Length: 260
Image (tube, rainbow, N blue to C red; front, top):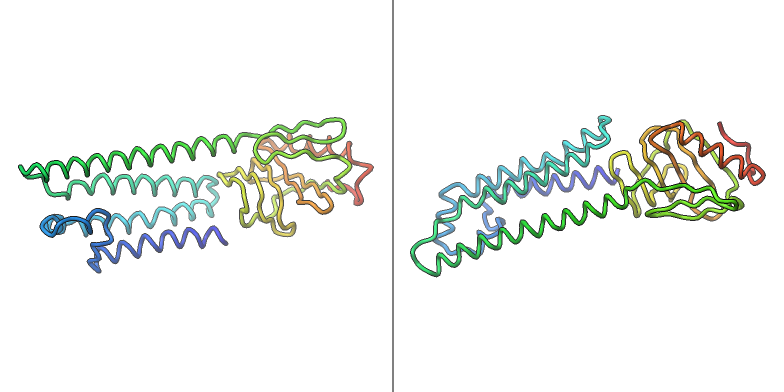
């Protein structure tokens, strides 16, 4: 539900800005326009800057909604597709809007200002690309599949959000055929079918997730006074195999009969 609210807020903000600029003539909301001299403002508006930016913002507002619709329709990468589309539309709008700037005159000051504006745009685009690349690298590192090592006294989960779990701390293991409903992300990664980190899970509360598939089965480890741990793999058989291995190592600890 929180995810839906966030996407609706993003789309609503973009749509509101687009309407305000295109139909409300709130041109001062356009970056760079409000600091331009009066004669340049007149030129940009006469060339249709307001109509273009307003229309583009309204089109861009549909991207998050489209991503949400795709996700809810069963396309696990729907949200990511919507955000990529949003970034593409934003980049296009920023670049295409440059054609509405007045051509520099023979005045050295005007030429210098035009060059500065161009350099600033290029620098902004490079910075944005670097930030996106940095975020992408971080996501790639966090999303790497964890390794599950069964040691004599416990299981070691390596990688981001990794943890060491003693067999003696586990008092119940379940193998569920389907995933429980996952709610708000507290701190972690939500990337398509990959859920990794700390999430609120319906019926379990705050939980630690290492999920590689949005389909079952899923292992649920219960530890007194600590967050439950949910694990699954892309290959369902790997999930079943790990469950059987953990069940054999913790059978004496379980307070409840193991679930099949």
